[in-house]
Length: 310
Image (tube, rainbow, N blue to C red; front, side, top):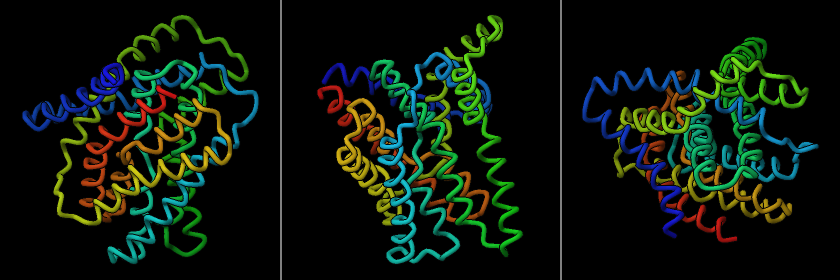
């Protein structure tokens, strides 16, 4: 168990360090936002591109793995929307926010550092596949739900938002480019490779610190039953469903470990970006992000221990 703590504890300490400094000093909070942009636009895309280029990709699409992760993810999206309406009395136009809050995990900023810090390189391929596909699938579903204009206008808005949020996302783009370079065996110029390697070294630590800075901007209260319900779905129901389907579909152990761990990740910050853009339930989403991150300190430690043992 000590070795597990040595793998997980530094990850959350880095997040906590960023959180405490940002709360303590407003100038650090402001400069930290620049670090967030550096991580999002430079460091993390550089690392993901290099990792994909150097990774041995599967010879065929792992449909069982993708099904085991995304069928529960989509189910959680609709179940979260249903609970928000029936139990918490959210309006119909707000239900897309509830869905993405419950099903969208923090895979890039938190999930990847945990995989790199806790497991061997064989776990990297399934992790990269999920990071590459999550935004495409779940952003598309969320945008489709939230756009309520007439059909022609709705389609145009959906397409524009999809291009900006998915195809314009540097993390998604870096993964797509990495897959193309890997598949077609394109040689990366040595000078470019050296520069990307330098940025890649900074990515894990900066990502975690930047996550802490982001969380410092949110408020947390524990008397909100909506938030508690969302956290239960995000941190417990989702990984249990993925574990069950992985077992049913006979997904191999290391792929199953990544799927379950990623399903147990806290709510991703992009859920709050959707809430801000549409001006819907920002407070509930922000509280869910920070509380689910706190809860994940314990749930992820247990899951890492379990998957290391088996």
